[in-house]
Length: 544
Image (tube, rainbow, N blue to C red; front, side, top):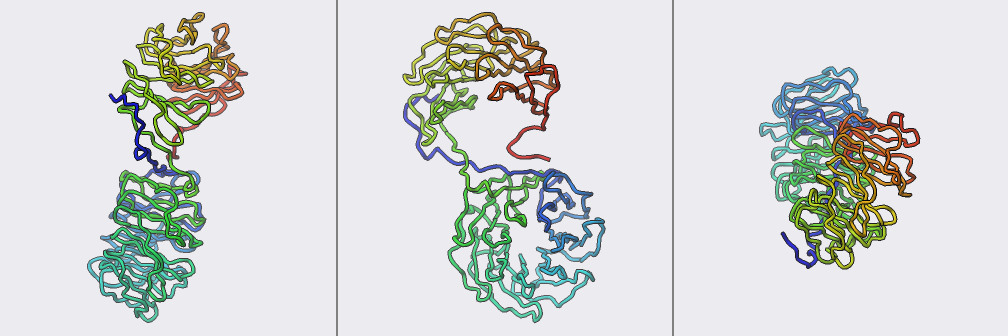
């Protein structure tokens, strides 16, 4: 256990990446490709589980039956009018589906590296597998080759149509790219070399002037699509291969994903990364901007999840992480001035931190036992620390001296502790099924305990005027108590599961409770009624 009084080095204060806004779950294996529909209300995902799923973005639910294949699906493309989906595999080729009926329209044989729809929806371009150095063009209505293959010098890894549909940019295994005229089959730009390894993804700017490429060499580069001259500096930041890129409809931002397990957003004009990266939990093989440019979708973990990231969060710094404890952090609390916080740990210490700098403020408060709960008085001068069955100690926050305690009276562990508004009293809840009140200056118990729970009391909260206490616990009830008389007010609120947490609204009328089955809001003015609202689990992201 460390009890050093030296502040932590600023290098240990770091930023954490944010989680996805939504998480779509339905695939049973890794997702390889994602795409937005033009209506901005649906997305499609393709998976190793041999299915393509169409999702309703708002609800997070599957829209209709999945599209079933005979092998793992690596690529999908949606027609500009949103009526068809082309899905491609390395083994079997391409299947074109009718979105409304979910029926197969055409099948194109032969494994592929990549596929893309032309802007007018008439053509599908594919990069064939098997070492064939060409781009193939398919007539969507006929389901047959519509033009001769566009010959190339190296194996094709990615393709993109120019916005006017007259040219195709192809990225190659050898790190180069070409721009090819579709009518003549002639190369009009390139081969252009700049990347030091394979080009894995490419996109045109909406006006067709720029071509953006991503590579195995970890860089993203921007080129003049007419001359092949690189424009500006590359976008650098990925720590591993950049697998995929997407561009907003206004051409201002680029999204990228890669094998460093991050999704990054870039300003195309400055080439600078916007905010911190979004941290994924697996290699990112596919990204796509929503038509309105606000959201980025990507594959999630290898369990088949699809992530939706909100780019409006990029203007907000990630949370500061304070590192100094040598064990689990068990409790946290803000000081009233909002400039300091305190943390408790099973390493037997309580540390006070400066919020702005992230540094420790003075020496840790050392204990003989792990500290599980803390509370700070309203004036910020005192901290009470609860050590399970070992009692409580009250500390002077300025001098770091123990001034009261250890305070003992509960038979078992203290699970929750709060100060009264004036700081004179402490209220505690325990595994012994009781709620007790203590004089904070002497540690002497005041009055009789509040009894009524038939199991562990997990959490308590006090109203702003100090007149009522709310409690919740293992007996699946929320109870309200009169602080002066110590008597329960009205009947208990009955929940369906163990109550882990309770909190009063600022006006003292409502109690919100959280448990295994979700969150409930209770109106204390009518203690016999059912909960006003019940939600699903509250999380940092939506799970469907």
